[in-house]
Length: 164
Ligand code: CA
Figure (cartoon, rainbow, N blue to C red):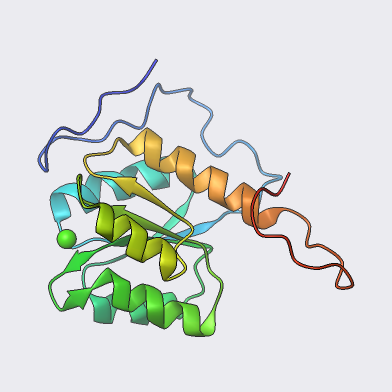
């Protein structure tokens, strides 16, 4: 049922069983994912999975590149915490000052503080390393479904929590 999980930085992600019908759903608009991760052993296979799942994929390996690529208006950001020139939290904080783009943090196992800080800074979700490509894609689709839900009319108070 589950695909092979990534057990360390060198393992490969699995795009899941091949259905031979990738990108056949033309009624769905293509989504652009910005993947911010400096470890190429994680980033490259994950980018491959995202592309094979039909996402346009931008990649960045530093805080500076992330902020630069974010100007291209991605539909969702996957954001690593530990980056060579700073923290993914800085990216999250910066992005939140100008947009509500969905953000999923990529956090290290056991770093509960990282997950809490990310959510408090406005991240929408997180995945814990090591993760499988399939798990990340499932999280992406879930978050995109949530943000695509119809906005409440403006005379009602905004409800935080489940949007069904
Ligand atoms: Ca990192």
